[in-house]
Image (cartoon, rainbow, N blue to C red; front, side, top):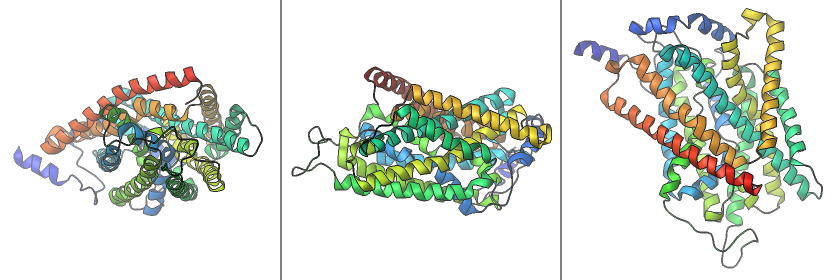
Length: 453
């Protein structure tokens, strides 16, 4: 028995140099139920002609964006301890990504999507659970983008001396986002979009960091946005669970990992590609969050743009982040839509190209319409991100990859220290989910009562 276990462990891939397959063993029956769907999905979404650079751009485009405007507020809720959480979540995000890729290859063939990996582990219940939670996460992210873009467009028009109702501006931005979302089918088609999205996001991060430090509170100068000297604390214990949920929201790209990996020409590079991407993402987060907290302390709001004065460079950064959201939304929503389209059989091999196109456009149009309606009903950016983080991100980030990995590989093939680490991650996710959800609901209720976020 010991020799068998040792042999199995020898075949477990290392994080930076993963092999392409595993022994199938007892897992063959688990995946056979989804083999037909997996074959259809490979044809539908996997095109191995992308580079590691394209993979980095896709991951960064998903991760860096409007979150940079919410994270300074997150740090204000947890104190300087938030810096440690940012680094810790980046490492965890990389590690669960590696685990999930191992789960994808835990049988005799690659399982091609987030939902199908979960189905291989937990059957039809796992498939539909993963499909729903993926859709909630991706749609929740897109929802926050529509809200921040709509509210900031209205704010910019106000600075120019005009007036544009937030509901109208949200409708306009949703229509603009709808075009690439319905037109583009797979992640392979939007790598250039991802590169542009990353560049615009990094420009915004730099502008927010520099402008925040230029307008921080001092005894000699402090603008009208300050209500006395801002306070800074090292750690605020009660804010840690909700902060974990919010920060994990920025790294929870595991729903898109199968699509990103599936489009890499050399998928064995996925481990170090993800490490590089998360390192760059973490650096961008720290730059915007630390400078924001230094400048505004406990008076930081979300989005942090509302802390900053009406300056041309700030308005330019606002416009750039709006453009970024337009380019980043397809990366996020296409991943969720591919999962749902797979579940419902909306693929050319089943319906034919014309019917597949018609159904894809219809489903994605309905998705955008629902997101727009919710955005208009609850236009509170920070509170929406916190709620989405608690409901879906903690599950996608901490729990599903870990549970699938353990279930598909089997207890005997995993070292005890790794099993313990998996248990710790699942426990952290559960606490962050429950506690974060309570805090998010309270915060959203307060925002609705006051009429502002």
